[in-house]
Amino acid sequence: MPEQDVSTPIGPQPRFWFSRLAVLLILAAWVYAGVTKIRSIDEFLRVIELHDVIAPEYRMLGILLPMIELLLALLLVFVLGSELRKSFGRTVLIMSASLVAFFVVYLSFVPDEVLQESGCGCWGKDGAPIPVASGMDNSVRIGSLVTTGTLLILHALALLGPAVTTKRLAKRAG
Image (spheres, rainbow, N blue to C red):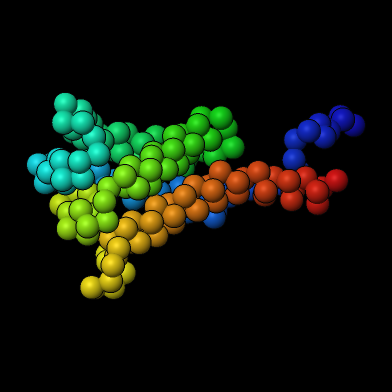
C-alpha cells in the first residue's frame, strides 16, 4: 500500500467564500471609481485643484489615478480567481489597501469647508459618497471615512480570511 503524503490536506480545498466576496466588492469599488473618474476627468481634476493639497505642477497626475484604479481592479480579477493565499494575491491586496489608506491621508489635508463644497472626488463627477445627513457639518468627510473604512475592513477580510480558515482546518485535522 503506497504511503499517503501527510502534507496534502485530505478532502476538498477551502474556497474562502467570504474572502472572495470581499475581493469582489473591492474590485467593484475600483472599477466604479476608475470609470466614473475617466467619464468626468475634467471635473475630477477640478476637484483636486479645489482641494489645494497637491502642488499645481503635479495635479495632472490625477489623470493617472483612474488608470491605476482600473489596473488594480484587473489584478484583483486574478486574485479573485485563485491567488488568495499566494504572495501575488497578498501583494495586490496590500497595494490596494495602501491606496485606500493614501486617500484617507490625502483627505485629512483638505479643509472641511472645501471638502463640503467640492466633495472628495472619490466617485468621479458626483465627487463624494452619499452625505450622512444633509446640513450636517463634515457630512462629506464622515461619508468618505465610512467608505474608506469599509474598504479597509474588506481588505482585512480578504487578507486574513484564508489564513484563519487554513489554521482552523489544520487544527481540525491535527
